[in-house]
Image (cartoon, rainbow, N blue to C red):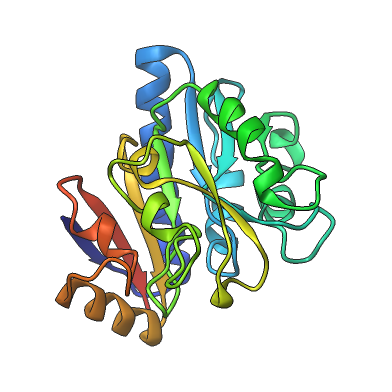
Length: 230
């Protein structure tokens, strides 16, 4: 199920998303002393990451990781970890705990076992996960046609992370799996622009999760807060 929120512009959305995420983190810290946050990459979250980087809260009690990662090093322009370091993990936040998904091995398949262990050691469940969505209906690295899509996007998946290769993905990927995302205390879907609004409307109108994998989240019993602006 989902709750749809519309904002006038990207700045207003970024501020609202920051408040949502910070509130979820603060709540978990009060309860358990430590909180984990999973973030997405791409171009859409830049304004949000900048806003979050300015938010004052007990960041030393937060562990940050990623929803998914392209199989490129942090120095690469398409690295999600690099994006997080440029726009969030800087200044006063440069020393907070960050758990990247990429490892310096040729393929994500070679790193899956290690990354599964690292993610399992986080203070789970996540206090919040912030997801994006492509115009093809992918979220995280759940790409239509992906070689491991059916397994990673299944509510019965036992792994924490899986490798993913798909024609539309650009590079090989590694991704958190659906059960791990659905277990989060707060699930937020950040989308912007008319094309993604149309893709969202298409997703909620249909049922085939392999055609548009974001449906696995939107049609689950867990509330997904959808934040959109033109």
